[in-house]
View 1: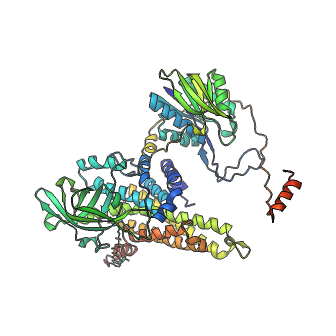
View 2: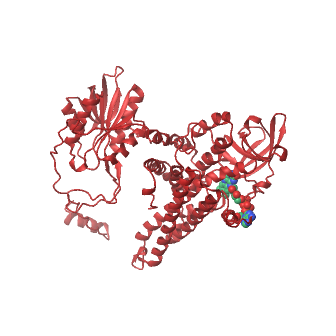
View 3: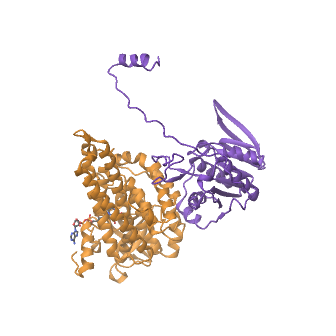
Length: 382
Length: 251
Ligand SMILES: Cc1cc2nc3c(=O)[nH]c(=O)nc-3n(C[C@H](O)[C@H](O)[C@H](O)COP(=O)(O)OP(=O)(O)OC[C@H]3O[C@@H](n4cnc5c(N)ncnc54)[C@H](O)[C@@H]3O)c2cc1C
């Protein structure tokens, strides 16, 4: 439906197929209940790890080394079920593992990445703080030298996977003498490291979101990511993750569109299926047009990612476009189902609610707008 | 132990299929192929035996270049190498398939051939039996359990038959066809898919294998099942009983 058939190769097709099969047999049957109960299917983590999805686009260290497009397609299939699934994989792969892969020492890579690919070690990524979201440069969390080790103190908020994480990549201010913002691998169970669940979410309910409290947590120097210095450290990770988020949003959109089409053909009003009404057809035509455009753009940028010519502003364009498009499509699809669209059974409003988060995380829609504005004019407006 | 396992592509069982213009086959426009589910059981069965006993799993398919995809899936699941024999679907019946496989057995000399019990397109359920016949090997069809003897000279095969289970002991080499309950086929992992790219698929022409590819069975005509007439609603149980008694003559 998205028109990918001629744009992807055999491996990419096989990978999309396999992940799609896994999702339909393992994740789909339980997602409605997981969402209602506000829980993530932790017990499936070993299964998805066995499939090789975790860290799949990284080279070496027990990772599959698949192409960016193949990884995007995997994200797409995961989010066709629920953005909670895609978020779990995104954070593990593109934020936590990638941070170590990109900025870590050889010893850190050897020590953590194979276990993370195998799902034996789960990671989270702590950048956002209660008072610093879009503007992480003002973060309060700080790390101070304490002998040869570091002492970390501060609060991280809205951290996906926090409750189940064995390690947290914590970004902390070290002061200008020590190179500003630095990344640390903080191990669960360290003294002074606490995690709280964030309750009452109406979005990404089938996903762990927590707050991390750090009170004079001692982190050995060997757990500092040696090559990350300044905001570039976390931003490179986010830039990488945004790519999967963008492919994921298309999965949500595809789910909603498929349901809306099915429903419109079956639902009769005024004696005929509502699919015979031009207003309904116009909605569907608009949405498929957006989905196909976004799909082709995603593949195109994926090829550029593989050849390392993808610019951060292009990632902003993709993330901004796909997440907004998916959210708007989901809302319209919900309306096509009328009252039936508001139940968890239909799944569409679940996607729409999730997309409220994807619209905001990994850089808000507004911030990406301003990144594009800056790229075009040279004027920074954020 | 060397195991030859055969896989076949079939039309997607979930697709709505139409007959082609002269009603001799299925119109494939817009219809995708999938690997036959019983073949996946056969591959999984072969992999489990190899993992336990050591050796090699050779994944075989007969068909045009596109069937490489399905061989690769078997390789991605863990098969060691592949063989494809190029023949067009129209020129295949169960007998040609069995003869091609028999020729491959002569070339490869495996101790075991595993196949799906039938392909869900034609539902013929003949290849395993024909192959065993051509080879003069013992056969155990519809296996729901396979236990290899310690000396790897024989296998105990459980088959589901009407009203119970039958246990056969077959000496190797043998032909075994897999039932759905034999196992839960594994997923090809993403690293597996990447590794499969580097595994070889040899292409052997039927002529070079010395196989007579004359088709014995030709499809003359296919017919769609008749459209089901719409049902009716009855107003009461008495109505229903009346109709069952007088119209359906079911009571
Ligand atoms: C479910 C979920 C999971 C998350 N997971 C993680 C995680 O794993 N790790 C992590 O570190 N973070 C995570 N986040 C946090 C997320 O990245 C932040 O929410 C996001 O960066 C926005 O920050 P904020 O919520 O503080 O909003 P704010 O930055 O306070 O923004 C509020 C509003 O103001 C707008 N705004 C802000 N600045 C400007 C400006 N200069 N010009 C114009 N408009 C502006 C924003 O666009 C937004 O509309 C997650 C968030 C959610 C909802």
